[in-house]
Image (cartoon, rainbow, N blue to C red; front, side, top):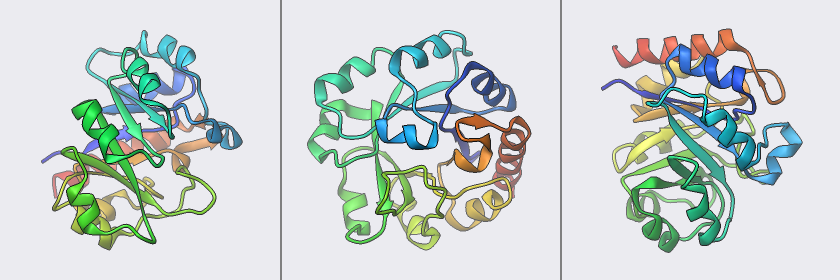
Length: 208
């Protein structure tokens, strides 16, 4: 199975188009205000303007933290999918259906039973941090992730880079991989060559 690629933290059209041209399957737009401190925040209107210029087969994902259900439904008129990266309940996931998936942080209190029982066929697994809901660049627990990948279509995030994504895929066998900070030239701006290398190495590992 070819591992899918999501490039997250998109803030401008040039980076979005570069990711698409390199073969990204999905783009992530971080609507959580806490992303401002890393210069990765984008509002829904600015994201919509970028999305209007994208190839039709690229999936767009709004990364959100603890938004009310009404707002989440509004966002689904702009984005293809919602990545619920806060403390959203299982009920919200059930209500939104397959167009939303939960992001878990592999750390204290998270068990394989929780991942397996959560509504939805897919989930994202990121690294644990006390300081942020995501985007820290810290590496996820690959051993935990490999077990979770047996339960769900797992999107592996947390510290992935062009240098380690092959090893991550071979060890975890995720449905998809997700990278952001390791692909930046500066906060909020992507290095297009690193995007291309990340996707190339992902495809190479998928064929191994």
